[in-house]
Amino acid sequence: MTTPQPPYGPPFPPQGGGQQFPSQQQPYGPVPGTPGAYAHPPQYPHPHAAPYPAPYPVMPPPRRNRTGLVVGIVAAGLVALGVIGAGARSLAGASGSASFPAAEYKLSVPKTLLDGQYELQSDESAEAKEEAASERAREARGARNSQPVIAQYAGASAAGTTLTVTGLYGQFKDTGVSRDGLLSGATKEEGVATAVAAKDVRPAGAEMAVRCQVLVVTDEGVKSTMPMCAWGDANTAAWVAVITPEIVRQTPQSVDLESVARTTLKVRTEMRRPLDK
Image (cartoon, rainbow, N blue to C red; front, side, top):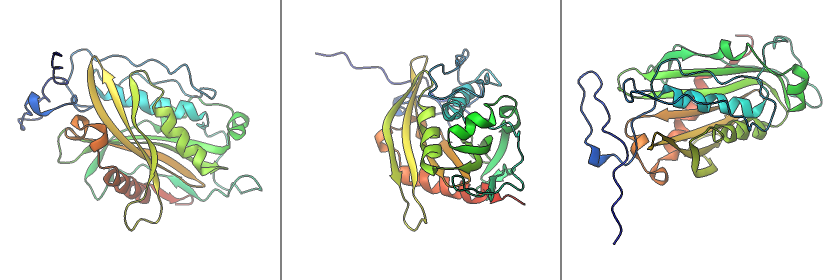
């Protein structure tokens, strides 16, 4: 007779006197980025096995909480692409060629997203530009004038809810490479495993499909479910992860990826802007 496995993780801590979730209802751990969830969260190392030259060092967590879990995955995704630009050349006035498309769009970082549901918490885009691969190295990887965008949003009214956007804009020869590279890179961080492999998801009525996957992040023995979806076009590519107390406790196979895909497409609509605006 086998011994039953203990439930995953401690109860989710109350936020401002909110409801406390009983431990028997949570198969997975507390939401990443929730202050006070752990007394001693780990520091996430640089992903040494990046398939491309690493243009950007992993940033340490800004606070000693599980935000570091997301930050590590963010950096790993960008390192894997090896196309993060430091702005050596301005996108303004850039023109297309036989290989590269014209530069027409950029990614903005608005103060709010999704009609005010999320408020900007941190924008690490400028820090990401400080160290980068050379323009020549980036062009060899199929990207020209690439600029990183890293932004984290907090739910305006939903405690413990975050939305993270990690991507880049520039001129991309192959939109699939940029999109898939971001997703693949996110799986390279220590303690991260792919639970649901990347697949195309096209919500009903959507004009395009996005590619989605579900990761399981193990931190000090506690598992958290993290779904993400990514888009890629000629000028922009990014993945979006929505993290809530409910989602991190779900089994990976039960995550509603169509809902995450719809959110990702809405984020694309709000962040993708003409280059001259």
